[in-house]
Length: 161
View: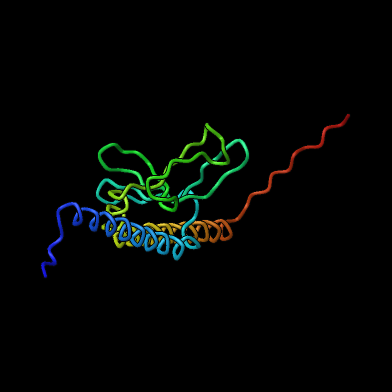
């Protein structure tokens, strides 16, 4: 018995596998974003290889949604990584607030850079913590210097009215 598939059957099988693998990859990306979202403040952006990952918001005439934006590639467009693959939507039905889900290519680009995106977030937050620590030390040093310096009091003469 010959088990070789015809070209059309092979194409159909590959299309089914591609859809399943895209869904599985999308789930993995969403799981990663869920795992890190409590530690990444809104407005944070990191870039790797010309691709940017941002935890941001999209506002509509009704309110807003928090989203994970991936931006880059050949056209530099932006997609919400948590929206369905290839979906195009309007936030709260507001035509002035369009957004779209990732393409398969964008999912792959994100997956290929996922570890480096997390490393970039770590590096960004380590640098921020170091700057905060340095700033605190500078303020404390200034306060100590001021406390050790005598203050000359000048009295303001009282005006007779």
